Image (cartoon, rainbow, N blue to C red; front, side, top):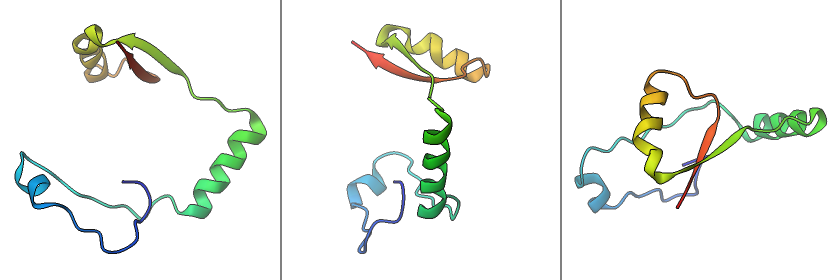
Length: 78
């Protein structure tokens, strides 16, 4: 989840019992800070770097992530 959802913030019993789950929060990144960051990126033309890769490469890319070799976001394509 991003941001703070309106109450109630219930989590279904199924999600709590199916496998290992963790719900965490962070006070970092207020709405003001998010808007400021987006303004800076718009003013300076900052763009994200995104790669596109077939799902068949998922295992190799996971190994690259573990070796800290990935420097961008990857979109899976089928």
